[in-house]
Every structure is written in C-alpha cells, then in structure tokens.
Image (cartoon, rainbow, N blue to C red; front, side, top):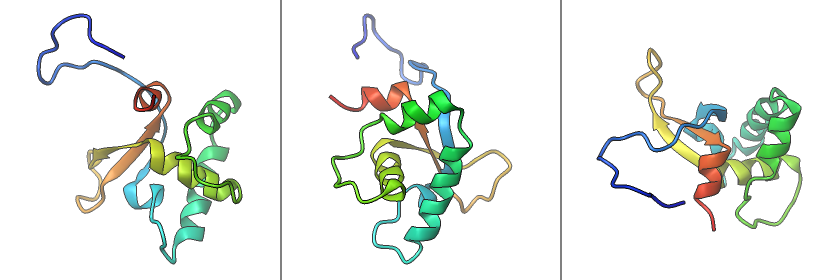
Length: 110
C-alpha cells in the first residue's frame, strides 16, 4: 500500500468494516488464567459471523504460531491483526476496545 498524493494529518485513508469488536483483554491475554474463557468469547464472535466473513477471518495471518486447536488459532489471528480503537461511545471509560478488520489487517503484513 502506498500513497499517490500527499495525505493531510488526520485525513481518513481507509474504511473497513470490522469482523469483530471486543474488549482488548478479550482479544489477547497470553499466559492468563482466563485464556479458556477468552477463547470461548472469540469462538462465539467467530461463529456469529457470516460464512464468507469466517473464511476471510481465518485466512488472516496468525503470527506463525504452532496450531494447537481452533481456540488458539482464533487468539493468534486476533492478537496478530487487532487494532486498538480505544473507548466505545457511551461505554465503560475503563474498557479499551480492539477490532479485527479484513483489508487493513492485510496491509499490516508483507
């Protein structure tokens, strides 16, 4: 991805609909005692996607982690491709959110 013209600071350069938006701590908590519960949340989020979105999500880069099971794959894909989006309007001010998107996530990798 490259710019074909000068970009003004703050200018929108891409728009992408997220596969999922979840609290950042749900996306990735390595070594946590909550790993199983977190994986359950990710699995439920993936199951709620449309079939083509599931396929596209699972095709994202997973950080080259060894495949253990579906839950670990979902965590690896999420942690490799997530973007922090901060607080949600009207949400808990102590909770930071992250999202995983299709095209912008791909731009982050070679």
